[in-house]
Length: 177
Image: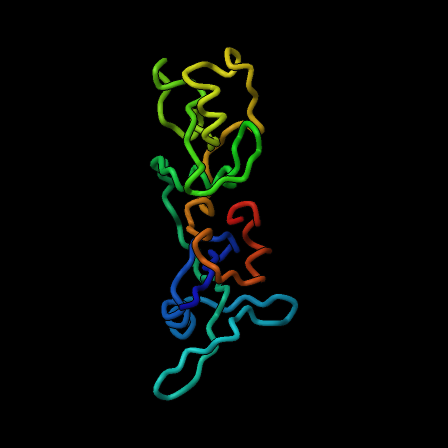
């Protein structure tokens, strides 16, 4: 099953929708297929209905602006790992689900909370080395300061092998690599 990237009316990426939902949005007149240099952003695959064969849209733009209420996103491990590009924030080692851990910059044992700003992705070795010390005490430095994740970090693009090349314009490779 293919999916489509759904953009707001102002071209801001919103989320992904199923191929079926993309076709419904398009044929109801709620969205248009985005054109890249005059070429419609579509998958090569088709959706076969009883009466016709339809090319599956890859990128759609809503015709009316969708107002989203901002809510503070709840902490999720997978999103933290996506935000940090599955890379240890101390030694830059690329990690996988067997080697990744979460490190609290201000240790939990010293009152550090599990928040987006206090947690980073770490390899097991660096996490053990830092232990329950502060960065200064452990003589360790972060590769980059932690920040709030973007909406793209919540999309589980890591598991999907289907990536349309047109999406590179809308979503940075760092958010799904």
